[in-house]
Image 1 (cartoon, one colour):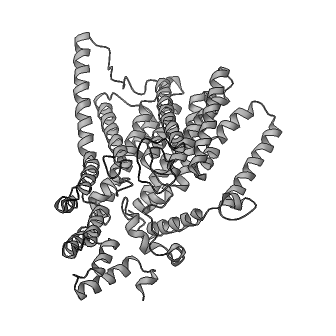
Image 2: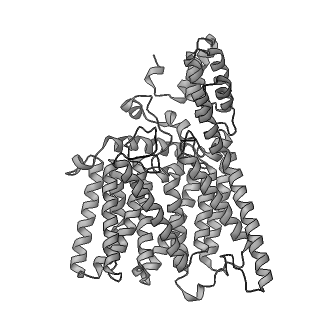
Image 3: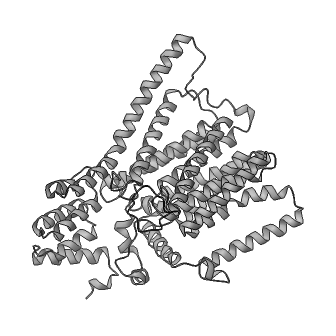
Length: 536
């Protein structure tokens, strides 16, 4: 692999480039966007963008870390600004043809990930990954994320298979792919995918069965599904007859992460602690039970719940705005169901995928590869709902790039201008997000060189990363370069005063003075007040 993290930086780079490119084209070809739905959506999106920018300056922590996100996550302000932009863009450009395009690209991505996951399961992976998890993790770096994405894909194929208006060969093919998806999820050894799949197929199943069963049978079925859902939730909480099947220790750990994140939000209700700052706050907000459950050295840099992550990172302001976007999507789904456009197998599948994504977001992390589809699907559903009425079909005139009907020479000039502008926006997106992936590549190259000057210089790449600087400081101590390690540790705490690892290193280095060690110990107690090892 060319980079230390070949998973997240490339995804963030692609997200930023597409958001900037499409946003730029939307600006160039804007005409008049009409309709209360889009006005409301634009206002909410704009408020969200402004709130994200305000969060950068109103919260503590390194501003560039909050902007780009921490290494291994990259879910900083930049990522969320681009996700919000894509949501609005996908709503505005949504037409029946674009609905098919979105479904096509999800199918294409899902098929590629499914095949690669099965290749990994058969131990034929052509790449040499350094991964502590199950060998089946696809292109998402974690079996939980891979199983969730494959589950979303399976919801779409299952929905298509249920549609009786399609030819039998297409239905059978989709059911077969669904089975392959479930097999792939099983190979990840992650229950998360099955739970996400079960949540996503409920609505497609409901509409499929409502045409075949009586009202009494449907009522019995709904009650049975509700009972199974309740028992499943209780089982995951170690209650009831299904606890032996569904409960995992990770459920308890997630509870610890949720409580810590909620405490961050309560202590910082307006703006939160800042994007991707959860890891620096976890030690000081976790409970005594969480500290002792796995030992004080087990930490997390995410709440494993997107809603709590929003509350912790951005306070109740951002959480409220996010709920408004969710509410707009739910209202759009209601409107689609009312006019029976739910019979469209594509929109039915996309709605099921959106529900599956929301189920994933309750129990897991907002990984970029998953989040982009969740936000795009929200916009697509809102846009499709608005376009149901023929009188609204002209809410945006020719956003596709063809522009108004003009003479041939002008059209050629317009196309040439579009190409130049598109190239400009692609370059702009690459310039904005490029430093993260370039640093990851240069850092890996420096480590492979085994050159001390190159490795030390890697600590000062822009944007500065606390984890990278800490790893280099630790490498220096392992090579008995305590003076250099101390100097770098002091630089870390200057830029990242809440770096527990840097303070601990200072407390342990032989070159630290007694006064420096004492100050470091006090800082460690501040950052990890329930750590029993610091009270001895």
